[in-house]
Image 1 (tube, rainbow, N blue to C red):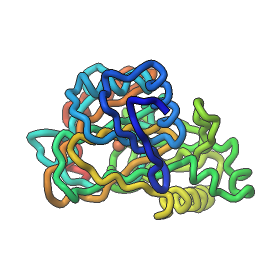
Image 2: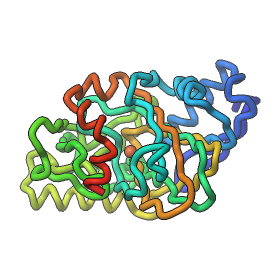
Image 3: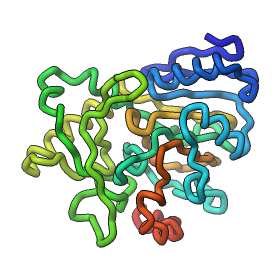
Length: 283
Ligand SMILES: [Fe+2]
């Protein structure tokens, strides 16, 4: 462990870190931080004071940060500060319906009052490791269809697709490059079907996977404080939240990845411009 920070394990997964000086980490300490992030795919850092540029710089320790317009944004239950209002979000990885979804997501608590709706994280790695050998054998080599978001608080189905909507095929079992750990990828929000199965069999298998993924003992609820940064593996770890019913909850979002969203799905620009209206329409 580096001398510039201390860390401890979170339950049921994740690592919490305290850093004395986020900008003063040695190369060795940066490598140790990356290793801790990769271990469970979730790192919590408390007590930071970050501008958007600071957050981008810090997150660049974990992969190439996406700086282009629309790839960073603010989430807030105050519509004057950010998007998504108070809506519930069911478990998902971000933008699984483009060929190369974000590698990591990172949220920073700009202003948060005590007791507001936590961000919930479910580990696809733990879910895979808890699956029976028979289930692992069944899902190995299968693919899923991931739908563009039309609903943020429930399942998106094939019948929800509209002209110009983007969909992508993603493997049911992924492999985290840094550790080799395998994970169950399909999330509740965007997974329409498992390819090659009847509708009934596909639904039954998805329900089986969701039961493993979202078992209470597989979920870490992050109780926000102002100054927290949470960075997670967007593929191996899914996230969600219950409705935001009160308090102040303003979070600044940064992502890492090889390709920007708009590069992969330029037709969606118009939707982005109308995101606030879209959210209120589907929420
Ligand atoms: Fe998300």
